[in-house]
Amino acid sequence: MHHPVDHDELEHGLDAAALWLLQAERVAVLTGAGVSAESGLATFRGPDGLWEGHPVEQVATPEAFRRDPQMVWRFYHGRRAALRMVEPNPGHRALAELETLFPASHLTLITQNVDGLHQAAGSGRVLEVHGTLRQVRCEACAETSDAGLLPLPELPTCGSCGGLLRPAVVWFGEMLPQDAWWQAESAAWDCDCFLVVGTSALVYPAAGLIDLARSGNSRIVEVNPDRTPASPRVDLRLRGPAGKVLPALVQRLRTG
Ligand code: OAD
Image (cartoon, helix red, strand yellow):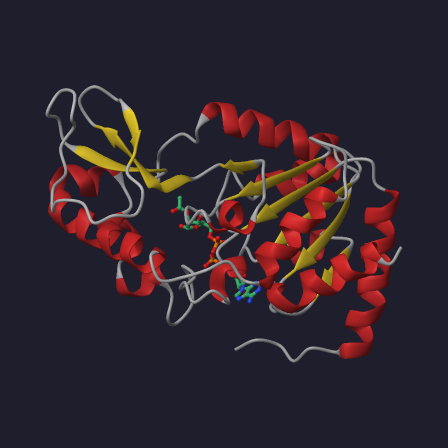
């Protein structure tokens, strides 16, 4: 159940957030599954969440893949198929537009999402800290390759060495892609305004970027229809769906 949106409070919040963004030299944005919810993709937690139907330990750990690669691949084939049918929503597009309002590399978009919808919306520089469903990696030779979104064999194998391929996403208990993660940390630490959009802020280390931004003295703005464990630690909460709140925010920046 989402909390009802208080329009007056939201309007004031949007004004304040727009001002902070206008004053900011550097901005970082952290997104989670909520930003893609209005495109029709399920989030992870909650009654209809992906982890309800598919417990994490069965489909998103290296142990699960070793035990039953077929079952794990079935889950990811399904998620890849879902991506063929969805498009970016106004929230993704607003973030792509936000990027154009800052000098190159002054806005960093960090996403926990593996759906590629930020790029599809036109965001040029996206740090995918949990990997991407569009790539596969060989369990044997570690070669990573683009698989696009076309259907893959039930148990896909590596073109170079014949080893078993896995989705190039981060599973529980695994390290985050180092390069993307270091850039994310540095952007969170260095920014003047940090937007936290559509994430339950439960999964670390990604959620730790919020604290990092806080220690770097950034203003923190949360965009989420619901409260999260991060809510008490942010400076401003914009209660509403990303597809409504973000376009309204960017509209204010456009008009100065
Ligand atoms: P969650 O499913 O945990 O949280 C989704 C958040 O989006 C919740 O706080 C919702 O209130 C919010 N939300 C729902 N609809 C929204 C909307 N229209 N606009 C804005 N917010 C909305 O998803 P994540 O926080 O992304 O990791 O989950 C973090 C990580 O946990 C994922 O990257 C994944 C998962 O396990 C891995 O697989 C490693």
